[in-house]
Length: 470
Image (tube, rainbow, N blue to C red; front, side):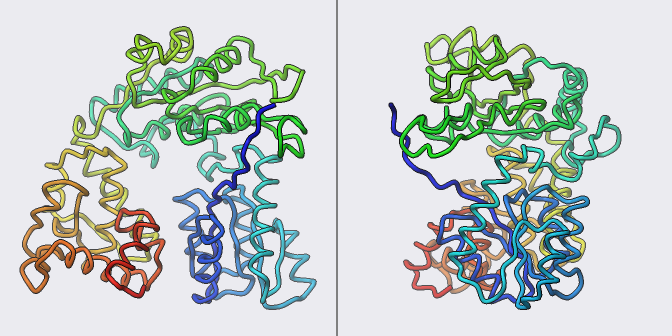
């Protein structure tokens, strides 16, 4: 019987509290426990974040200026994402606790509380949500409205280039069917966005959409994630677990990076597609499932078939409909509208006044090759929104990791000014950039790392290297 090592899945938690010290200390503790944490100073700011990012749970304070914690719970229950919420309060009034539960809170804690207790409760409510809810618990408000048309401007589908119009046309024709779809394209081109759109335009739109990154889960764990397991199936299996294939019944299972799927698993996926049934690890009963498969890869699967690392029969099963996404450099006419979309999104998230792209910025973006495609454009815009000091974004506000543009910053840019002034070395320039971004985010390390395009661990190493107290 195989042994599966215990793992702690990284949850993404949003903390909403008007007391900065408290929300930052909670975030720091959750991160020390392996969770990812973001913070918001008000219910309104929390709503904005939840409309642009996905979270596994939210911790919200009861009494806040503007939108109260109870009002936030009402919004979450009536129209927000279906995720569990834990209410925290300095007032141990039983009426508040009862009202919070009525409005959908999964739990209630009275300040001051032991942070270990919060961690335990978060793991419990997120775990329960993932078992009893389905991936519809991760859908946004737009998903629940079950849009059936691509008319007008879809915030998830921006592109007027001929290449994207061709993709749009194919998506509209494919979506109403139950055929498997293989989406190909370079990293960062938006393969999951297209998969979600196909799901929303399908007859399965009211069902769950469950994504799984085939290359992001250890090989010895991926079968238990997909098919689930029975109690006692292996060491540590103390209870039955429902797999993602089963949870996706009635909806769509998105297999991302399918080219990384190990050969033994390919056999089981092929059988699932043929028989519409799965078997949990340690089980003896075939469980019928009703699920549509959309797969995606940035690899050449036909070449992988020739090399013997991908099954030919599975390839043809997955590629009933093949949909290729063009790289951003092949649809440059879409760059301005995509860039402005991201500017609007991050300006709202950061509470900045309305920002627009200057002519020089648009010219810079139009010239750049974007090897990282739409994802790189979004990251570049986010950094620019952070660094810009006026109401208009200019070329000096943009940088692209590893490009020639980074090495030769334009005059008047932060990097250019640093090189022209006292800062002479690359290390001094890097230190200055870290200091400035830390100041912009008031010392918040997670946000600073995201803005700089590096991991939190890398930032911590840099702070130690440059003797920065952040």
